[in-house]
Length: 322
Image (cartoon, rainbow, N blue to C red):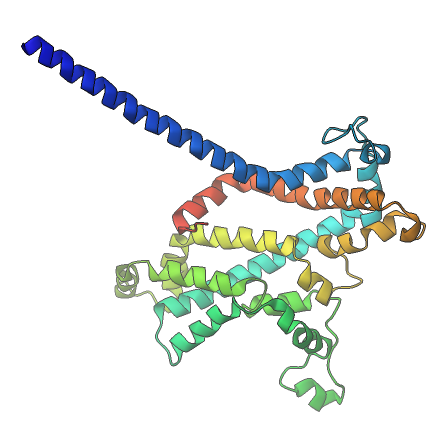
């Protein structure tokens, strides 16, 4: 009798074990399908551009060629490299992205720390203004920004002294420098919010212990608070660099003769061909534009492979999701 009960129980246990593991296997398959689908949606356009960039024009009209070229060629890359003046444009874009990302990191860190740790009049109102700036489309500020830097003046002092309307800062790096220094650059509202949330979550005992040891406000900031905020600072630095590298709106707004990666793509096809675009095959124009996009993205892939460990660590410790 006891043997039968024992066998019955072990049979029930086996059924429970099988049912439990079957659920895990099904859930693992569902997760794998979802992840594969998301990766496909993200990578498919990029892989398509890479495939097209390695094709000849005849491959585009060949119905039997889908993703793999019949004859691989690097002619498109050579054409785009020469048309973009890639070497000069690369170093200009690198300098601009490094400069703006560093300035934005400094200004947004200071502003975020001020919102998180100090009390001053209209603090909550000003922070709501920062949040509101995240919701304003940049196109609504296009004309004010353009005229502001076309006739730049500091509280009217330049016009009062010289009698001229203002200084033309367009087609220079000064619009990017000034907006980054004052925490009003690209995505700076988001950076201020992230830094404010990060500093707000740090214990007050750290500052109190520093004050008791004789540290002032500034020494406490850069000796105690900044080393603890390195993960979030790395996140902002990487985001600022990548977004500035691929920025098309502000680059086209402020720069015309000064070429960087983003605004070079707009005139790539016209520079790649000596004839009028109306006499050039649309497929060939698309091929050249896809190749230019690949050349713009390649440095970001290299940056990611170099800074991958720091980037993943900063995302995990900063709590950014989605």
